[in-house]
Every structure is written in structure tokens, then in C-alpha cells.
Length: 199
Image (cartoon, rainbow, N blue to C red; front, side):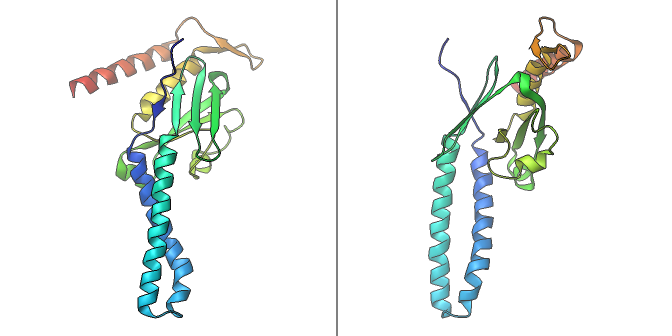
């Protein structure tokens, strides 16, 4: 078995995180800085605000670069693997047997940038909505915060899940024959690849 071929998130996700970071800095300046406006001279207030904002932006950019570089995922024959974290590193493996659903969502910033969020729901998280699990930066255990080929990833995962056969007791095993739906998903994937080559 060769080395694992880890995938990266779309580089566009760094722009989305940076825009969110700027919004956070503005909110912090308004919340914490406004009281100083009435205490300090205008020049000191402006200088202090600029220093504070610069330090926060440097910290945010550093975090974005490190977090992006350490967020990798892999879809193999057994399940989905995700590696992430800076100080506290987390390795998550989600077997296809546990996956109940995969959904895709986009916030306003993601729509602007042209990326998607992919949420992978397991038996324990299936009752929650995607917005509940993906509202934070870290999201659910099967959370890909910024990808461009979301439909392809979703179909790839669901195809593997559909290849499993439930024995009625909650135990899933690998199927050998493809169902009509699986064939349709495979055909769809091939058509998308052909269209991408043509374009």
C-alpha cells in the first residue's frame, strides 16, 4: 500500500476566513474600543485602535495559514479521514458504515467566494440540522469547511455508503452488485468529468 494521498481544502477558503476575521475585528473594536473614545484624545484613540486592529489581523492571518496547511482529508475504501488542528491536533476517521447523510451548504461569504461546506452526518449526529453543526469553525466531526467540488465529494461518499448492505440488525456489509441509483451516480460523475475536460 502506497502513501495516502491527502487532499487540501480549496485555497479560496482562506479568503472566506479572512473576511470573517475582519468582521470579528470590527465588532471587537466597536465593543471594546468605543468606551475609550470618550476617555482618550482622538489621536490616541485612533493610534490605539490601529495598533489593536493590526495585532488582531496578524494573529488571524497566522492562524488561517497554519490551520489551512494542517487541514487535510482523504476518502479511501474504508471511510473518510480528516486531519486538522494547530496546537490540539485531531485525526478523525469516519467509516462508511456510520455515515447516515451528507449535505452541502453555503453561507453568504461562501457564495461570494465560490466554495461550499460539506457536512458528513453519522448515526449520532443525524438528527441535527447542518446549520447547527456547521455554524462553528470546527463544525461536526465530518466537516469540510471549504471545497469547490462539493457535489463530487458528496456523490463519492454516498456511492460508498450505498455499496453497503444493511442486514436489518444495524450491521452493514459490503455489497457486490451495483444498484440502479449507484449506477446513476457513477454515470453522473463520469459526465461531470467529461464536461470539465471539454470546458
